[in-house]
Image 1 (cartoon, rainbow, N blue to C red):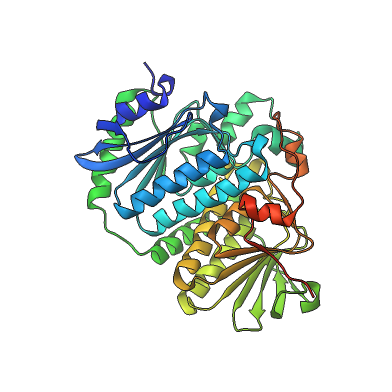
Image 2: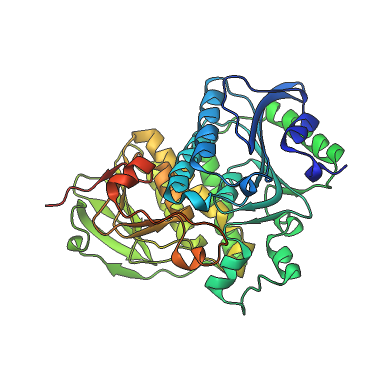
Length: 418
């Protein structure tokens, strides 16, 4: 019997000795939380069942994972997360986006606490689930696995059939399939049988037990350097250009000076803080995410206690065959980690949504921020319109009320305007 043919509980039982469903944690139809032994050491497991709502994360599932990760922070041990998910549950709309924000924040805190995490990627890992998996020390893929920040139909709709043909299974596999993903750093392709997966997990667990604990900032720097090298190899790096931004362009934000450098906002605030952002309706790609990470790490090394102000007016992450082949998910995951790291240093990272915000870009910035404020021009969606048109699902009605946004958890407050 193959590993992928097993149920979620059977997968967990197959991987570790003495597996038991974890008490004191709310279980869900698509999620099993448990604890067992890997390589003779305690290990937590999350197994996801794609037979329920495609393994999608609604607010309840995301909150359950957040709470589960919170219990692990009290008694740390390595974590294995077996994902099989299309991402956020479209039928819940912004409720699912708010839940994903909370879940990503909890996973980022576990990463910053240096808790080893291994992700086993099932048949489908798309959207926010791919960002979550990007937090892993390592990722297991199978030949049948598909992994991407955007699903094939969305990539085709945004970049055009000439760039990516969602109906061409061979092309989809060559970009998003397990064998292709295994070419990237920290990924491995495993045969779809129980013994192969168990043996890899045992070795990972043994290595995790004796691995040297490195500071979060050092790990951020290492990944940032690796990503820059990957961007150069993929031809996705760009030369910088600069444009002055007038403070009046963003009223109610305390801007002292700012410039847009190659599409990324950089500046200072009137209270001595640092200003960053993606503005002017720009779709953000891997290079944009990397530039922000690099700037945030520079601040973390020189002024970690200074306030951080983030501005966001970005309809979504960009997508194309090249961006997906380069695993754009990992760039936005690292961005979320960098933002969350500065929060852990100063507890003073504020995200101002001044225009469009959606999907993974929102999760990365809002998930890491201390506080998120919606301005009068804010337009928050679970996905941009062009992507929603490609998703064959019952999409929840769009919520335009900022007070409702607060209840759903996509923002924490609305700006007070003069």
